[in-house]
Image 1 (cartoon, one colour):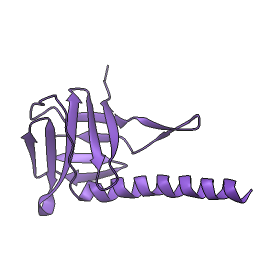
Image 2 (cartoon, helix red, strand yellow; image 1 turned 90 degrees about the horizontal axis):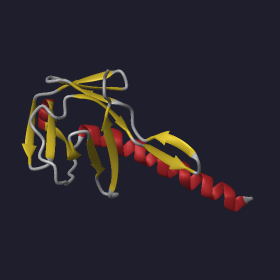
Image 3 (cartoon, helix red, strand yellow; image 1 turned 180 degrees about the vertical axis):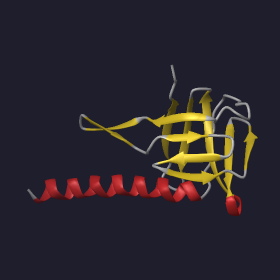
Length: 130
């Protein structure tokens, strides 16, 4: 019984760490790589994170994100975008105080954010509107 509790606590700690790192990294910078070369406005639009499979339970790794030309909206919060820079397959979105968040594109409809220090990627797919 003790072993099961330790495993559950380890999983809970891992999930909390992933969520915490994503939130911290939203303020910090991260890097990624890929083969697609995006256009400046490629990041604009709504994006949904792929789910994490936790023994049959699909759990979203992060909230949906929507980019406009001047803001990033997520979880009911809007962050003003100062500028957007391209470097190969990476798009870096800069916020006030010159803080950037880098997304790497695999295609025009799929990108990822690499969490620093733990080598974990959060993949996002574009949400198509009808």
